[in-house]
Image (cartoon, rainbow, N blue to C red; front, side, top):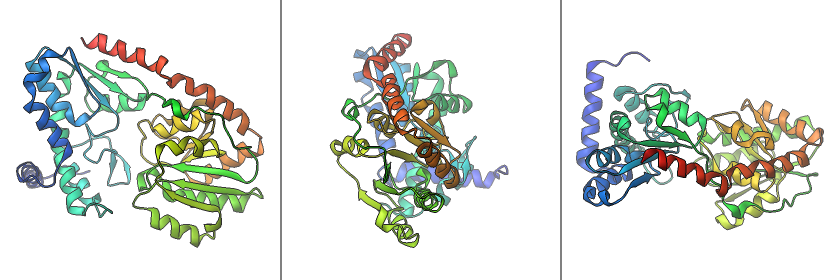
Length: 364
């Protein structure tokens, strides 16, 4: 990207000042930062504060400087370095640097409309996060320790200037309600599953092409269940009709969490066609715990998470179809299911909690 002109930088700074002073929109990140600062005097009675939200970095840095309290912040996505939270420049490519003019242009160009919020509202919200990103990077060295969900998240934040030696990788913890016997028979019709938001960065627009390719290249019967909602749902439903797949695709919308273990356990494979560098999706643990093999894009640390409980692909519909057919034709589903059940043991509380204890002890 070309170096921004002085006028572009100045216009971006004015935009940030407007967001901060106008109160538009209601901004949870900015409100959290202010609320923590307003209660500064209450924190000295605690030995340590652990925030799961990266927008709290500026406030926690000040709390740590003005009190005797140690501070820990979880890096659960990219909000501390990217106002969009996905590190995808113009929604097209991975982003490896930020700046006022660059981030403002990207935030405004990709805000668009949304079912719940206007483009203007989303753009203003992202500018508020840009303000927090700039403050977070200036405050990064004043946080005592960081919890990163995956090796990829740690490397990314370190590359953006966060103190590498203070970042400890600790994975998400398994919700034990998802540990249950697998129910599908791993036979035709093969039941494919997607669970998550129906948005572009999740790659859900590839689900129907994957299914269409499977039907063209194989005599096996496949069906797909799509659980979740989002901006692309209508387009996906139209895509199913256009591909002549509406009879083998089910869109359930969002389901209560208590119903999901049964959903995972009754399907043969979980598909994750994401585009962004997924920090650590809980859906992977949920699927592994139910013994449902995962076929996923090789993004972020997905390969490290699923291990031998599934397969990774290059993210294209062609490679997804190749991987699914390979697993089916080689009769690997039961093997992968057994591997998944063993793999998920690394994410149980008795393994993960001691890692947090070590992190806290180091920060104190």
